[in-house]
Length: 248
Length: 261
Image (cartoon, rainbow over all chains, first blue to last red; front, side, top):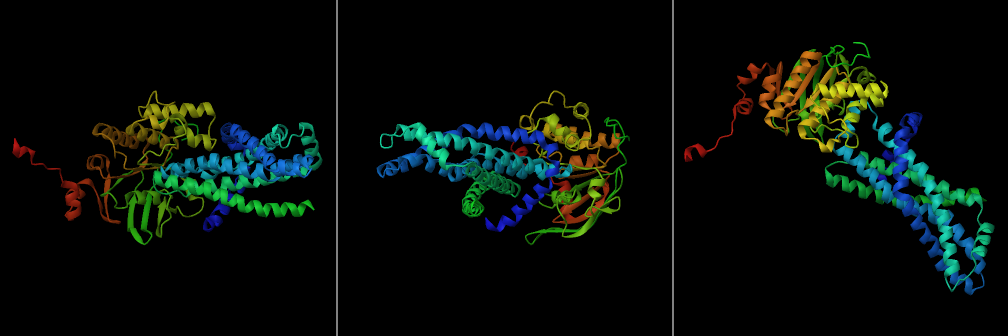
C-alpha cells in the first residue's frame, strides 16, 4: 500500500490542478452525488442510530451506578460527533462507494475504455477522477451530519428506554447541549472531508492501475477498500492530534 | 473543410503521412518491437499483417501515443508525436479490437463523446452529427441502446462511427474483423474502402485476416516476432520467399474426411 502513496499524491495533485474544469463536469458531479446519497443515506442513518444506541448502552449503566447519569448526553454527543460518526461513515462509504469507484474505473481500464478516452484527447482525470473525488468530498460530510443527528437520537432513545439508565429525553439533550459545542461538530466534519479525499484518491488510483481481467478488477476492489480503511484509521489518530492542538 | 461541415460525404481536412523510425519496445525485459521502420503516405491504406503475438497491437498503440517507445520515434507529417502539442495538433483515431465503447453511455452518447467533451458543438448539433455518422455506417435504430446490447459487428461499426466524428486525418484499425462472421467481415472491409474513397483518410490496419488484407491494402507489411520481414504490394507478399510468410499466406485447413466418403 505505502509504495503507491507517491502515485496517489500525484493523482490528487493532478485532480486539484483540474479543479478549474469543475463547472464543465458539473453534470457528472450531480450524478455522482445522487448515486452516493441514494446508495448510502438510509444505511448511514440505520448505522448511526445503532452506534449512538450502543454507546449509551455501554456507558449508561456504569455512569448511572456512580450517580453520573446526567453526563450520558455529553458523552454520547461528543463521541458520536467527533469520532464515531466520521470514522464509521468513512468506513461505510469506502465499502459502499469506494468499491464501486474502483470497480467501475478498473473495468474501464481493463476493457480499454480509458485508452479510448485518451485517443479522443479526453483526460481521464478530468472525465473520471475529478467528478468522483469532488462528489465524495461534498457528500461524506453531509452524510456525517445526518449520522451525528441520528446517532444522538439513538443514544437518547436508549438512555430513555433502558431500565438501568432511565433518564428523560430532556435531561439527555440538556447535558449534550452543555457539553457539545459547534466546533466539536465542525471537528468531525473536517475529519470526514479529509477521509473522503482519501477514499476518492485511493479508490480512483486503484481503478486506474488495474491490470488483468475480471480477477484483476476483483483484486483492485479489495485493495482499494482495505487500503482506504487502513489509511482512514491511521490518519484519524494524527488528525485528532492535530485538531486537539488547535482546540487549545 | 470548415469546422461546421461535418457531413460524411465531405472530404477530410487533409490526411497526414506517418513515419516510424527505429521503434523498439520491451516489457519487463521481453522485447516486443525490435526496431521497426516504415512509412505510410497520405491517403494510403497500409496493412500490417502477422500472426498473433507478433506485436501488431503494441505498434498501433505507439502510433497513437498510448505507449511511449523505448527507442525510436513516430513522425506525423514530419513532427514527432513525443514533442509537446503535436498530438493536439492532429486528429488521429484508433478503432479498438474490442470497440472499447464506454459501457455506461448509449450508442449516441458514445459517438458524440468527442464533441460533447470538447464542447465543439451545441447538444442538438452533436445529436445530428452522431446520428448522421451512425446512418452512414448503416446503424439505424440503435442510437439509444447500450453497447452491451449490441452484436460484435455492430460494436465495431459504432467504434468506426465514433472515430469518424473526430473527422480524422489518420485512422488506425486494430483487428477490425476479428470475432466477426465472414459476412460482417466483408461489410467492415467495404466500409474501410469506402471511407478511403469518400474522405481520403490515411489508414493503418492491423489484421491477421488474409482476405481483408488483400482486399483493402495499397501496401502491406508483415510483422513477425517484433520485426518487419517485408513491406510491399499485395503481389510482392503473395510471392515472397520467406518460409514464415509463405506458410502464413498459403496455409489452409485440411481434413481427411473426403477420403472417408
